[in-house]
Every structure is written in structure tokens, then in C-alpha cells.
Image 1: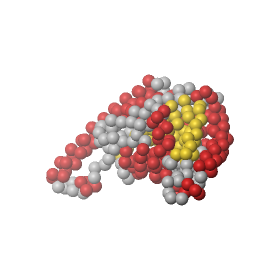
Image 2 (image 1 turned 45 degrees about the vertical axis):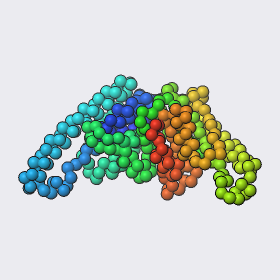
Image 3 (image 1 turned 90 degrees about the vertical axis):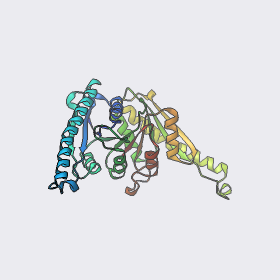
Image 4 (image 1 turned 60 degrees about the horizontal axis):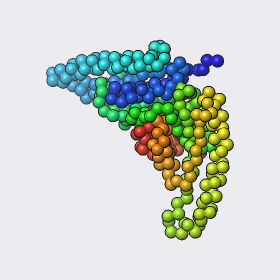
Length: 313
């Protein structure tokens, strides 16, 4: 039975990271099961200038800006056509990559946010560097999207992330299982190995008197209990992934215990083992709206640079 095609919104700013973003996407998606919208928002001429069009100097300036806009749109469209050819080269039908260029209506972040809420399976954005034909920086937009786009799956692409290895941060929450299902439905299932990682934080006894309250034996027993409690979640996640078509020998599980920071442990594991993508649910066990982009997600957004970060709604 033919799988339903996934639809990805890729925010393109024309910066030097654009080709890295497309390289990353080309290496992770199943070409025959994916549709991509290459989306670019063009900054408009500031209203402060438009309101002074009767001034001869301003009028000439605006005329030059209009010419620059026309040339920039041509450059962006040419870039997007070259990106589409790159997707065609990995086996995607040409019609599966759509080009959308629009003039800013409410600002780059707001316009991208509005587009992102139109039924995409994932929203892809670079972590941001300057330059390129667009002259825009999406890095600052990424943080705004991360906090406001609570109903969509956001992929933040790092700088030249390694291919082929995906780390899924796991707990027993529904959000974590949604993240697992998302991975199973979105990736090229024959091209990646996956690690399911659970972090058990330790109890700090650095403060005076805490070591007596929480002796070593007690702390160790809590860690062992937490490790045992995550086993059913591991089994369920493995079942989801194998049902999606990922071979069992491509899936591993790991528990890291007694660490002070979940985000720090995830980051260190990703960097140490060469994972190009880290995936986590937005909410975790505290399924409360106010905790969208909770502490672990927020810290990883700040830390992640050498890998891509998927935050799944």
C-alpha cells in the first residue's frame, strides 16, 4: 500500500546555509514519499520611505529599491529552481517541490508562522547565518517560531550535521511517542540508525546535610527504579519504529543515569557519538501548555550547533 506523502515547509532565506539545509533534507527524507514547499519572504520597502515619495531624493531611492527588489526576486527564484533540481537528483519528482515567494505582509517571522500552520508535517528552518541573495537572517526567526509554533513539528538544522544517525530523547510520555512516530513516518528508513535515549537525573547532595538525607544507597535505588520503569516505553518505541519499516538491528536503546542536566547529557551524547539529528517531544511528562518549549528543549536550542534539532508537537 502506498504511503501518504509527507509535506515539509522549508524556509529559505538565501543565506550561505541554504545549500546545507537542502543537503540535510536530501539525506534524510524518502524521496518518493515527500513533498516540499520552498518558502521565501521578501522584505518590503519600509513605510517610512513610502510616505516620503514626494521628496525627489526619496523618490529616486525608492525607485532604486524597486529595481533591487525585482533583481533580488529573480535571484531567489533562480536559487530555488537550482534547489529543486537538487531534489530531483535524489529521485523526487519535479512536481513534488513547489516554490513560494511572497512579499512580507506582517514581517518575516509572522508570515512564516502563518504559512507554517497550514497543515505541514514539519517546518524546516536553518539556525541562521548572514549573507546570500536574500540578505536576511532566519536564526532570530527560529527562536520566535520555537516559542510560538506550538502546534507544529519544528526542525532546526545545524551547521553541516552528520548524516545517518538519529538520537531520540525518550520518556514515557505521549509526546515522546509522538516524536517516535514522527521519525518513523518522515525518514528514509533504510538509511539511518537510531538510538532511543533516556536520561535519569541524579539527586544533588552538594548542599550541606543532603548526603545524610539522600544516602548513596537510596540514590542508587531511585536510579535503578527509573531505569526499570522506562523499559516498557523502550519496547513500545521499538515496536512503533519496526512497524514503520525500520529494521530492528538499526535501533538501539540507552540509559544515562545520575547526571545533573538532561539537556547537557543529551547534548554530550549527540556530540560524542556523532548524531546528526536529535529528536524530542515538546512537553514531556508535564503535559501543560505553559511548558511548551520546556527547559530541556530550550536549553538544547541554545546548545545545538553541530546537529539538527527536531521538536515535535
